[in-house]
Structures are given as C-alpha cells and as structure tokens.
Amino acid sequence: MKAWKLDGIGSALSVEEVADPPVRPGGVVLRMLAVQVPAYTRVLVEGGRGGIATPTVLGVGGIGVVEEVADDVTTVRPGETVLCTGLLQSGRTAEPEEVLLGWTGIGGRGRATSTTDRMRRVWRTGTFAERTVMPASTVLALPGAELHPDPTKLAFLSWLSVAAGAVERSGTAAGDRVVVLGASGQMGGAAVLSALAQGAGLVVAVGRDGGSLDRLEAVDPRVRSVRSVGAHAADAAAIGAALGGEADVVIDALGPTPTADLTMAGFDSVRTDGTMVLLGGVHQTLPIPYHQLMRRRITLRGSWMHSEETAFRVWRQVRSGVVDLSALEVTTVGIDDPVGALAQAERTRGLSITVLTP
Ligand SMILES: NC(=O)c1ccc[n+]([C@@H]2O[C@H](COP(=O)([O-])OP(=O)(O)OC[C@H]3O[C@@H](n4cnc5c(N)ncnc54)[C@H](OP(=O)(O)O)[C@@H]3O)[C@@H](O)[C@H]2O)c1
Image (tube, rainbow, N blue to C red; front, side, top):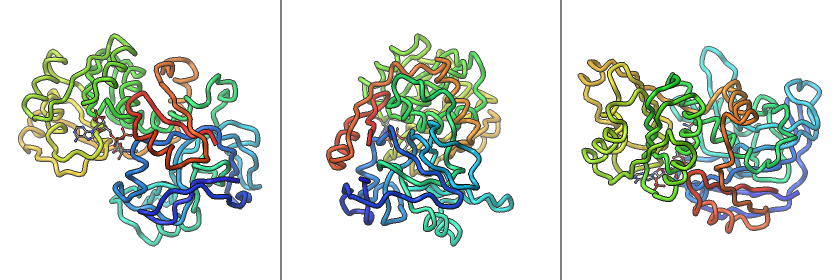
C-alpha cells in the first residue's frame, strides 16, 4: 500500500510503497477514506510546529472503515465507519500521559518522558496512508456514517471535535455572546460552527482573512465578523463594538502569532464572571493583570484535544444537521503527490479544507 512517510523533521514528505500493516494485539486495521490535511502541515514537516517521532507514516485524524480487529478489541467492528482521533492515553490515573500518533503533540507539560517515548515507539503509525493500524482506544465508531453522502466532509470531524472540546470546556450556554479569535483559520472556523451548535446567541468571528470571515457570516445570521488590524486597543474596540458590550465566552484558536496582542484584546472583552478558553497555537506569555482576572472573576482555562464523548456528540450534531457541513468547501487530493497536496493545503483556510482521499 502507499503512505506518506516522513524520515525526519526537515526531510521531504514522500509517497512510499510500504507493507500492509498487520493486525496486532489491541489494534484495529483501517482503510482510510478521508483525512484532513491541515493548512500548516508543510510548516510542521519542516519543524515549525514541534517534534514528531520519526521515521513515521505522517497524519492524524480522519475517517476510515474497519477492515480487521484484534481478538481483544470490542470497541469497533469490521465494516464500521469510524473516526480516528490519534490521541493515545497512558491510562494511568495517577499521572495521565497523552500523545498524538503520527503528528506533533504531547499532552500535559508537553515534554517527552520515557512513557510517551514508549507509546510513540510501539505505535509508530499515521493516517496519511491507504491503510493504517491504530490502537483501538484511538478509534471511535460512528454509527450511520456509512450512509453519509460525502465522507470527505466528515474528515472535518477531527478539527470539529477539538474545537467542540474547547466550546464545551467554556460552558457556553444558549444565548451566550461568544468571541472566536482566529476564526479565519480551520480550527477557528470549527469553533464558530461548534458555538452555533451549542446555541450561542451571537458569535463574533475575529480574523484577518476577509474571504474566510465572509464565508462564516454567510453560515448563520448570528455570526458577525471583525477584521483584526493587529493593534491591541483597536482590535479590542472593534470586538466590543461587534458584541455591543462584553463577551460571555472567548475562545482563542489563533495560530502562532508574533505577539499576544490579539489574545489580550479578547481577554479585555470578557465580562465579569465570563470565561476564556485557550485552544490555539500561540507561543507567547500572556501579560494578564492579576487584579483584572481577580475582580472580574474570570475563568481562564486551556483545552487540549477532546474526550471520546465530545467527538461522539459532534458526530450526532453532524448527523442530525445541528452542525451543518454544507458550508464546508472541500478540495480533495490523492496520495501520489504529497508535496503538491501540502501546497494545496496551505492555500486553504477557515471553512475551506483540503482532504486526502487515499
Ligand atoms: N488545542 C488543541 O487540542 C489543538 C489541536 C490541534 C491544533 N491546535 C492548534 O490550533 C491552531 C489553529 O489551527 P488552524 O488549523 O486553524 O491553523 P493555523 O494556521 O495554525 O491558524 C490559523 C489562524 O491563526 C491566524 N493567525 C496566524 N498568524 C497570525 C498573526 N500573526 N496575527 C493574527 N492572526 C494570525 C490566522 O489568521 P488569517 O488566516 O486570517 O491570516 C488564522 O485565523 C494551530 O496553531 C494548532 O497549534 C490545537
């Protein structure tokens, strides 16, 4: 079978003929149907988004069909359409450790340990491939997905589940005024859809790319967009004007920004007793005034990945139409040209996504 192999950070992603992955204890063999290629994959391959255990087949998330399960696997059944989360958990309650397979990402403090190294050595696997073998705990059955008219759109379930994890952790309630920072990105676009599904009364979508923001406004009249100008005070004022006041919830889904200004503009807009959730890839220290956090009784929390329950809720929202994927614009790429696929992915943003159909 063919797969996209990465020999090391900084080396080219290449398509290679590799042996079909045999089933193994605790494992599930999947035939991949559709896998989102995130916009930043080229940057990740070049080392701009943290370490990856290599050599490896690259790729996280995606929709597949179960071909075979090990004797000890009871979570999914052969023939079922499933979501691959890629999130492997140590299962040790006292000191939980988590890694993403086939991608960058270690949970907790983000530092490799002998346990995370072992998890990524034993399961050196990814989803940019015709087939993959995954630990059963990283695979979720999606009953009814086999009837979905367009599995390429279901590839967005991976990003939607991550975004929904943040929206759920924010406690967003029906009628809330929600601000999404980085809404013009794919994660931010997913967060907007998730906040709408949660019943937000108003979603202020903040970003730079006008085309992505226009597309979000067209999804639902509850969405109001704000073009960031990259200046803290001006962005805070524009967000406040769009809200007509303050935000109940702010979700930060920004990519790596050179300053914390936009994140702090979002912080400024949080109401007393409001919540801010950090979900994105900002690598900055936040200058949060102690007395502001204290007096406004703000809840500030992080959100990394999601539970299986969250992903299953997202699937039910998609299945029932509560999350409407018709706004998604999908460009499909085949497995034969990874370099072209990564270039194509880099040109997509927001609700426009690139999906590998191997
Ligand atoms: N918490 C988790 O579990 C989790 C899981 C997966 C990914 N992530 C993180 O989520 C982040 C967002 O992902 P993504 O797929 O949407 O892609 P991304 O390319 O990392 O982020 C794109 C967003 O960031 C904005 N942005 C980038 N640089 C900016 C700057 N200098 N000033 C203002 N805005 C800037 C973009 O604005 P424009 O497009 O308008 O320019 C866009 O809205 C990633 O960085 C990733 O690290 C988190």
